[in-house]
Length: 291
Image 1: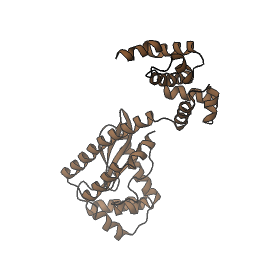
Image 2 (image 1 turned 60 degrees about the horizontal axis):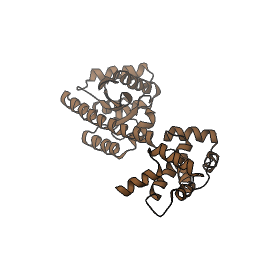
Image 3 (image 1 turned 120 degrees about the vertical axis):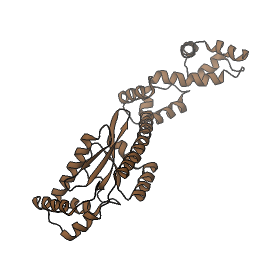
Image 4 (image 1 turned 45 degrees about the vertical axis):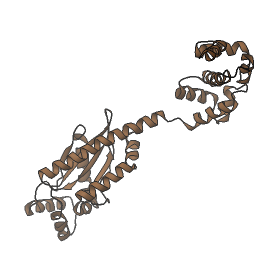
């Protein structure tokens, strides 16, 4: 569920607008990833750190980066967290929730929280050598020291911005969940239309199920789950609603209306009408005339 929600959020206009504005304003990459994602969130994205991009091309270094993402997933479930990778760069994750459920993280980073040193770079080179990673040292050096450095205040502001947006995304995700819960399956929509079109006829559950190409058992179960009532009750309510409109016409007898809306006997019509509306068709009509 969380993966589908994250996909819906990342394809939304509000997320795409924010991602573009945030990255252009800060020069930092930003991504929204699900809790169970095993991908590097900023790889091949605009504003990806060139140093990180070089390491991501080597499997051992890539595995170390994924471990950092795993560490963020474990520590940022309740509040924003910043984790420092073995090369000394920092990544930031902010939790995104739907109700009480953690669905993903807003992430940014690939930055230094303090100015890097040559000693730090040399330790990183040794670490890469221990991993068996061979890259151009001059290019690595340039990319490493070109990495963006955030002051503590800038870091705090970035976290605050992403936290505010994470709250907004939580509200959007709640709306998406509600829409999905309330969304009516197409098979039920088609069935309702068929019932409305044929309500005056002697209509059976078999006929409706066949009209939407499902088995009687499956349709019966699905219809009750979606509408909250069974097929017979729904058909009775549709016919009763039409009867209410026809009762506005004083020239039509109650018996005529009963057969017009699809009931096979006046007795059955009276019984169903009273069960649904709490009064007989005659009393209902009398109430209308007094209004």
